[in-house]
Length: 126
Image 1 (cartoon, rainbow, N blue to C red):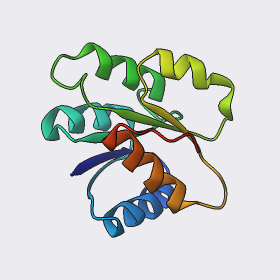
Image 2: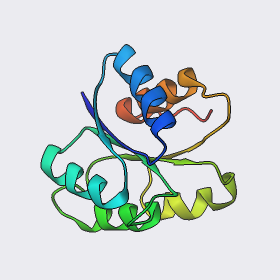
Image 3: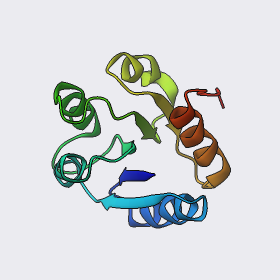
Image 4: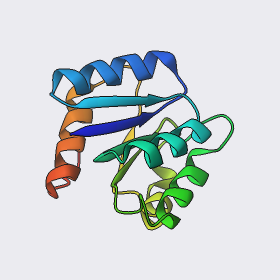
């Protein structure tokens, strides 16, 4: 399974990418919103992990663009945010499949559980 990780933080891209690869996923990386939209359309991943605070095109605008594009709208998107869960309901209403709060102690097991939950349709609340 292919996962597109759209994240501008090199540390987060590396840490999350390693966790996903270790769990058996192929990972495609994008460092900004514009690159992420292009990668989604070119690679048609099985799932997208999307940071909300991105350069060039914001995470919210990326989410909206993905959900308006017939080619990629079916791809589930897990939103990654360090801003707290205040916007979770709005992001879910915009089409996100799940919301995952970033933390300073990068919890890869929560990331993998969330990814697997979305991919299997069991979206366990973590």
